[in-house]
Amino acid sequence: MNGAQDLSAFSMFMCGLLLLIPLLVVWHFKLGLTKNLLVSTVRMAVQLVLIGFFLEYIFKYNNWIINLLWFLVMIVSAVFSVVKNSDLKLNHFIFPVLSSFIIANFFVVLYFNYFIVNLSFILDAKYMIAIGGMVLGNSLRSNVVGLGDFYKALRKDEQFYFYKLSLGATKYEALLHFAKMSFVAALNPTIATMATMGIVSLPGMMTGQILGGSVPLVAIKYQIAIMIAILASTVLSIGLSILFTVRYSFHKNGILKKTIFAK
Amino acid sequence: MFSLQHVNKQFSEKFVLRDFSFQIAAGDKVNISGRSGIGKTTLFRLLLGFEKPDSGCISFENEPLTDVLAWNVRRRVAYVSQDLNIGRGKVQAFFDDTLSLKVNLPHKHNSQPEIKQFLNQFELPESILDKNTEELSGGEKQRIAIINALLLKRCIFFLDEVTSALDKSLKTKVIDYFLLNPDFTVLYISHDNYFPAGIELKTLKLG
Image (tube, rainbow over all chains, first blue to last red; front, side):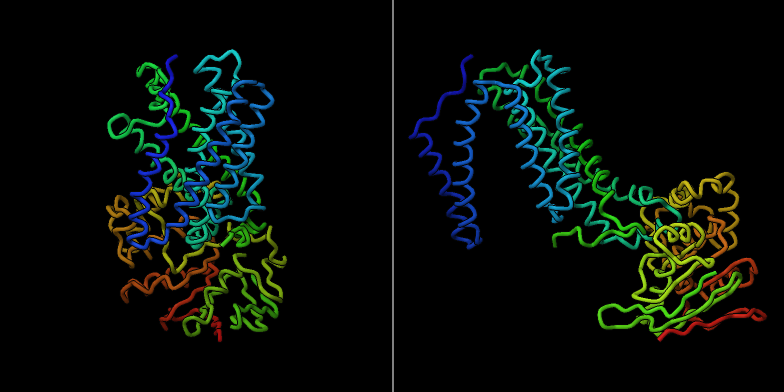
């Protein structure tokens, strides 16, 4: 396979020069982002370099236990990020959301590897970590919207929730309206991306595969499969996250605990 | 039916109810009055278990109103709130949603003629069923919420300013409908002084 051309030190330096454009804009308009921008760039570079070395070993050994453990580490950090960015209390949400993510992402990734790619070793590092990362990254983004909005809407629209309860609704019946709204909010961006895919954007995975030497048609088939896998994991993880968290988020009389919010 | 004994409830520094006691018997018609902001709605929320008293005892049918019993009360009381937050979508779908709740399913069968009869009674055209709830005026929303409560076929009503946007003749009609039915137990908040002649009206003045 003729992989993508390596980037020399000079190339990386030229890339650094490109960073001057955002830096100049941020500095000139006093957007107050200079520090954040620099810190994030450095963090990204350091993290990726470390991960680069790490992944080389993971791919080299391709041991199922290490692969599994690494995927778990990815899931755990995704879950921390979801809960923190949804303005929800970490200690309250970490375990239910973690369970939801483990079930949803393992199911989708293993299904993908076994039924779609037909791997004989379904815990193969390359597939598990690359496909898993894409599925997980999207679950993360949509759960921040889906789970965060679910509880925010519930707090804001508590009167409507009470009204449903007063009509005799069970807790789950009364929450259905809010769950539907959060599915819509979480799925809309993915659905919109799918509709313009190929025309407006060549997705990252396809770009990577083409640069890596795959024929565009193969890359396209993978892209279609991954988008559908992302939809499946989004729906599964949001559904399960809501289902698992509502068990702990309400008082016995059906009232939302106000202590679940971080802010 | 409901009994409040020495109930205290305060929000931050302000007392809504202070050493408050009151009995409500089946068939009672109770007008809750008091200047606005005094916490009349809080009383409904306490009785429905959406708020808890700071101290004192609330009971329903001689049982203390526990978390578990609150669910029961919510299946027995038809509550029409002042917010009129009746969601989005078609009016017909709003009624269908209410009647599709597990506890209300027995009333779903044959509800359509009843809906039409209520629409007629409260002077709404049948075509309103195809309208979106956002298109309704305040008075229309109030009547839709009232009909929704009546479809539940419950006998206890908590009505929170449900006639404020209605004209005089409709106000009379709605108030008569609830207060003249001997089977109904009605607690209502209203700023109107009207009530039909010949009924025994209890008044509960807060503040």
